[in-house]
Image 1: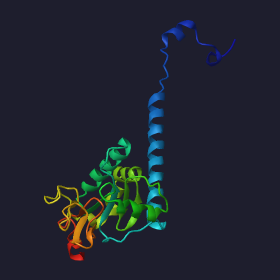
Image 2: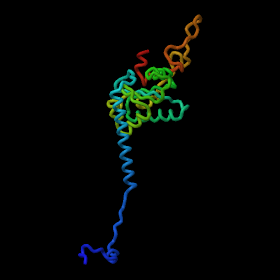
Image 3: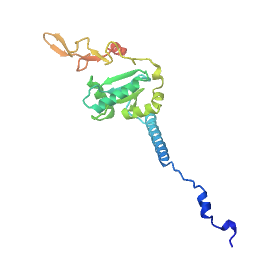
Image 4: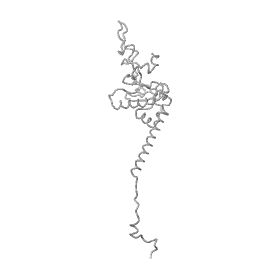
Length: 220
């Protein structure tokens, strides 16, 4: 006869012993893993953007070290581009930093600047520069804003100085009518010469707002 500890349990004993059900949190685990992977991917992309901003040699423009410059368009011809420009400008303004708005639809010279800097006629908008160094477009700005790195890059520019609020002179457009030709882009010289193109304004008869950009008036 087998020892008691080697004998199989009886059916009655088996029936009286409650069975433990195994529970699996498969869905929760997958969601957690997916979240971790997404966070790691975002962190990796952010590090790449920061490395490019600090070590690469992208196009540069001459502005004050604390200034933000955004090239954008106010035209709604391409809805996606318009929405990206509006979103980026809203993000930059939330830091209450001096923003140099350069609307390519108001002055074609801004578009020519971009084309020269990037060496191509096809330049997407918006384009953002921080302290004269190229930061990126809409995707890069939104990503850096979401992770909190954009505020660090702006640094002292977020002090609240500058034209961060809507200007009463230009209503936030950063341009006003030329005082020399009154928006016609033509000036009368004399009876012999007649009319000539105004040298103070752009093709649309506009000049940079002297309130938003006081250096413009002194330069002229």
